[in-house]
Each structure stands twice: as structure tokens, then as C-alpha cells.
Length: 545
Image 1 (tube, rainbow, N blue to C red):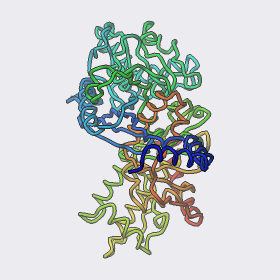
Image 2: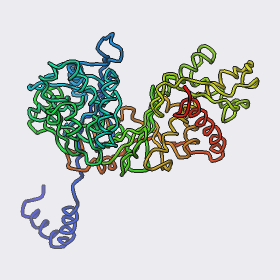
Image 3: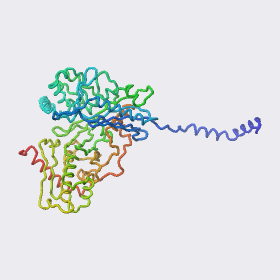
Image 4: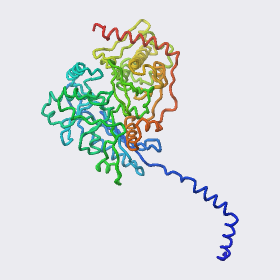
């Protein structure tokens, strides 16, 4: 053992000889910042849809979804043609179950905000206590067809050329309620959209409800250039109606704070306020979830119906079939919707191809076929089995044109079924691509983000890229609306613009994009023009149907 006196002498001598080195080493260590502690901050996104509610929890530091849940439900039973309704209490119950489920999955994470995406156009009528007076009439409820015509005529007479209405929009539903349920209408204090109602429940909003311009642009009252509800249009329904609509707030504004009930479901034990963002419609939130926040990008969704939408700095042109929506980040979001999509293709597969074939089977054989060219050997399929929304041909029917002895040949390789299948796929692609002519950007796109069930089909992917002549990319996350709602919650909680917040996120895409073939485009161009010409001859304004 070293005696204390000698130890002291050794330390003094060492410091005398090596003091500068020790000071330099200390200074270097003190100047270095400590290693950052990984952030456990997460944001909850809810998507309250027609068939169910989806919920996911997104961690921006990790750039990934760390928890998810879902609850399914259906419509209220009804024998009334055109009616489609749901009780708002079903949505609330689903939200409760979803939040409780993800709450069990996120131990160690800190919830810092909640956002809500909702099915568009629904009418939720509330009394003075915020209680629903009746089931919500949904976007797919078309009972208000006559009321739609009344309001559209009034809007045009009043000079509101940008007013775009379909029976699915909210304003005709409110007029329907006044005319068919006058007593309930008189008791109504507020008329809100589905996502607005969920925000009210989450944050216990007692005063005037709030909404965003994105979802409000589907209510039938909003001037999408000024983002203000047109009071005179509301007055056509009732002089008190304008004051019963939600107040429109900014995309990154906080609507309120999560109440104790939902905090407990998420397992939040501290008293830190949890902001609830403005929320938006499902299409608007989907655009956020896939990163479509810049002009030149578009989202194409291949589902039962087809949609094509993209962000624009200018509104949709007048007198076009585009829905002139606003985006959830302060811009415009022109949207085209076609009724003819994967449902028609599946029907052709089932009725025209060998029993048991899948879409993969048909596309594999088409890839190997040397007998079926682009343009289907002159065969043109018009896929309007149930009418069409874009173009607005509600009375159109399906048609198969260009049949010859060659196209009627049915060899051992099931050529006829394959030919009709490809003709249908080309027609659906042309139907969606044709809507691009109405977009402010025209046909100039930098890239298209392809989503939906049909987006998984490699053969169809290449066809779409060739027809659009732009590359396709494929988001990995399928619940893009819920993810977009989480992004909006993050923007509101951090005071960041929604667009900038989305651009900061690492949105995962499939590794390979699909690039167009210029050579294939030349062949598709001929078939596309034939499709367009035949459709207008049969069902356009000059047709004699």
C-alpha cells in the first residue's frame, strides 16, 4: 500500500508534468455534446371509414408505425332505395376499442398528438348538447338526388360557378332532412362531418365545432378559393343554417385537447395536454400519408372505384367533372372518381375466363401470349356496367366493340377470355387516364403514387406507366389515411406547416419504380383514341340514347 504522503507527492508531480494534457483532454470531452436520447414521441392517426375504423401510431424519430389496430362495422339495415346510414355511436365505440388496443402496444412511448381522418360528405345532425339526432347519412347515400338538382340550379342562378354537387355531398342531405324530417331539423344545433364529430368527442368540444377546408370542400357550401362557406347558399336551405356549420381552422391548428376518457384508454398517466388536430377527409389524409404534397405528383387508387387526385396551387377548372376539393395542407386537391374499376375487371375474370383463374393467372398468360397485342387486336371494351361518374354518363352501359372472326377465336389457350380481360383492363386504365386532361397540370406528371388492391398487379402497373408516360412508385403503408392523420397531428403539435412536416418524414416506398416505355405508348395511343371516340359516340352529349 502506498503511504498517503508519497501518493500526494506523485499526484502533484504528475499534474505538474502532464497538466496541459489533462486540461486539453477535459476540454475536449466537455465540448462534445452528450449522445442524444432516442425520442419516444409518437402520434396517433385514426381513419373513421364506412366499413371500419383503422388506427396506427407513428414514431417520427424511428420513421415507422409502432402500433396498429382496426374495428369493422357495416351500415344500418334499410329497405329504402339509395339510403346509406350509420349511427355515430358505432364510430365512437370503434375509436374507443382501437385506442385501447394500441394503448396496450405502446409501452415506453409518449403520445404527443392525435389526428382524425374521416369518410367525406356525411351529414351528422347534433342537438344543443352535441348528441346525434339521427343516424348519419353517408357519402354513398343518394336519397337526396332531387335536392341536389334544386341546390345546383340555385347555385348557378346565384353565379356560383365553382359549386360542385352530387347527391353524395352534405348540403343536399341537409335540405332532405329539412323537407322530410322538419321537427328534427328544427332541433338541430350543428351540422358536422363525420371526422368533425369524432374530434368533438375526443376533445369534448362544447362550443362551435371546427373543421378543415379539405373535408369542408365536400360539403357543397365552401368557396374553395376563399375557403369560406358561402352564407347565401346555406340561406337557400334555411336562414339559420350558416351559423350551424363548423368553423374552418388552419390545417396545422389545434382543435382541442384529448379528454380524460380517451387518455385512460391510451394508458396516459401524466397530465401533459395532448393536442387533437383539425383532422380532414380520407382522400386528403391519404395524400398526406403517401407524401403527395407537391404539384406534379398524383395518387391513383385502384379499388372498387378508381380515383385520381393531386395537389395543385390553383383550383380545378370550371365545368369539368373534377371535384374541386382543397387539400389538407392549404392547397387544392382536384379529384376525379370513376365507378368502373377493379369490380368490373373481377366480373370479367369470373364470367369470361376459365373457372378458378385468379388475376395473377390471367396476367401471367397475357405476359406470355404472342397473340394478343396492345390494343387487343382492335377490340374495344367500354366498362360502364353501372353507368359512369367521370365522364358523367349515368345511363351508360357496357359495350364490346370491334368483334371479328379473329377476335372470336377461342383456342386451347383460352384466347377469347384473355382478350376480353385485357380489353377491360385497358379500358379502365384509359377511363382514369382520360381525367388527366381536366387537371390544372394537364397530362404533365413527375410521378404517380399507385395504391389500392389493383396496384399489386405487375402487369397492370406497366400498362398504367405506359399509358400515363410517367414513372409509378408504390407506398408500402396501406393505411395511408390513418398515417396522414398522424402526420397532421405531428404538425399541429410541433407548430410546423403540414406540408413541411410531411416532407420531413421518411415515407417508405417499394424499392423499384415502374418506368414507362415510349414504344408501348405509341401503340396505346391508337387504342386510347379509339376508346375515347367510341365512348363519346355512344354515350356523349351527341349520342341518341
